[in-house]
Length: 242
Ligand code: IPE
Ligand code: IPE
Ligand code: MG
Image 1 (cartoon, rainbow, N blue to C red):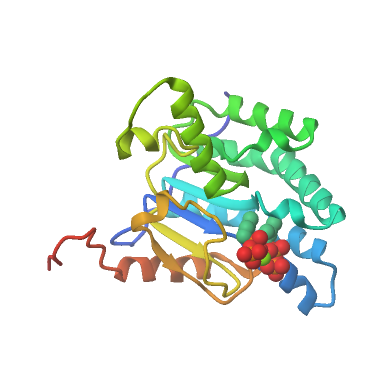
Image 2: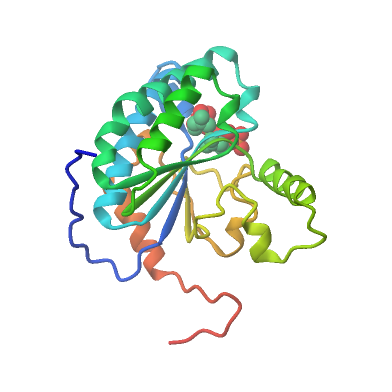
């Protein structure tokens, strides 16, 4: 493709999540505290998003998901939604070019086809361009809702004519069919809820709720979070092994 493949740096983490999922929250509060409009917070949020993608790649994470627009976010004022769309459009058009160097595969979870047509086109160009990426997966969760995803799966199962499915088969009908479940879910801004995120996939995820707002989430915050993940004891219902 003509892109320079970047090499990952050596890192010292004992255990890294294979799939890190981030609920990027607090853009509005970040802006309000600075006397700015909420949209300025979303702008700053994109800067943090770009940096975090690079940091995840550098640190050796294989899959990173970002919850950037929920099915419930349509209930916000039109002006704010339009600003978010135009920021996502600029991000996909301009910023993802650099990310292509990471041998990345960009995918989406959520019905992004409900976005404006030109944005849908940009997104699909990006998915097509990166479809053979092997090193890193960037999953953009846009117009995503966990309940909508489950209902969509059930409808698709019924349409497929299947009479019953087991858990593994069910997972294959979700947006995340080709991804492992998230090992670690970070939500910034101090809120301690999922807000309809990865409801099926989070069954055994570890959670982390730093107080800082998303635009302030930098490399040191990511490393702090990953160190915390390294201390967790994931038992999956078994007895602790030491
Ligand atoms: C997260 O920041 C971005 C989106 C949900 C699109 P918010 O916009 O939710 O910021 P707060 O939570 O109001 O501070
Ligand atoms: C969750 O944040 C959705 C995204 C980050 C995209 P919200 O700000 O929309 O969630 P609530 O309304 O505080 O639960
Ligand atoms: Mg919020």
